[in-house]
Length: 440
Image 1 (cartoon, rainbow, N blue to C red):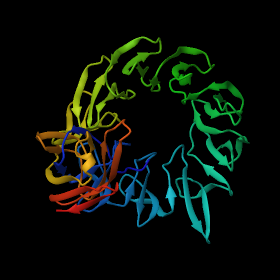
Image 2: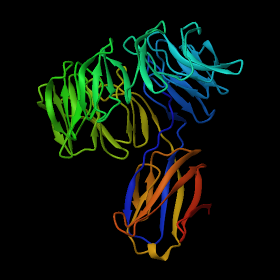
Image 3: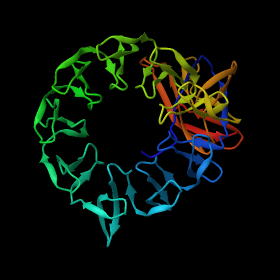
Image 4: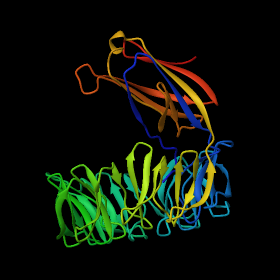
């Protein structure tokens, strides 16, 4: 998975004719780019505008010099330089030169890549010496190897190949199909009513298609939906938990997060509450004994399996990976361990950008306004907001809605580039439904 800067939104209700908002912008020396993989985390350096890798103590192990990077897998990482993709080792040395137009991580000893030779595009799998071992044909679309096989779409059919490139399950008609997980593959039948079921590595139906939606098997069970309710089945298709929840996550570390009547909680495989339902927006799966809980935009925390908060009121937190998680709280960011202790931390310096919202449409001036802005906000005074998670030289979406949910509903949205330590900008909303963004 590529590591790119990810944008979240906030909202604030105001009843105003003219609004001036102050945005605080972290001039983060390095922009967070993902979690640990094989001991290293990809990171973006604002000064050089390049990616590199740091360790859990924040030290650059591989200096920032790449245009794009991915996490390490099987000792190698996909990186991009001057528009081409190749693979490096953990010293930053090229082990497979950048000669591909696209590339994915190594999985089970093979990596999916594309290149052009003599004017023809070639897509297939290479080994760790960089040699093609499987080359696709016209109409082939590949997935990475998983559970010993790779999913291949051949025009409008799906099949699975082994590492010699031979079809173990010959292409056949499915509406959709997934890679194998725990020796079963989720597929959706090609004919109405397009239900989901599971096949084995012989291509035989093990669990016939009867579900409205379903997930891969994890820890011997899979979540499935019937009539807008979700439950869990075993590998024989037998219910271990009848469909009764509104939403759910797959089982991890023996438990699963589920939503019931708008509240999220955590259950075990006996359908007993491990953590009773609480009013939060989401509970992710558990890793290293902890789960990320979202309470709203830029407001997350970590809980253990007893339901105790290890950390809350965080601006950003990723699931634990290899025993550590990268978090952000007001003014600080870094790695913590499962006990909630800082292993590495650094300050997030701030600077300000002022955005002035101007309403030219007279009909809007007495209407309820909702503003979605650039990051997590905290009020400084009646018309000033302090924004904590925006960065220089990045584009951010903004949205302004009026009379939401009524016949007179109007919406404006666009993007703004945040740059410089001090900037004054007007977003001018015009009567014809257009807008301009102007420097003041």
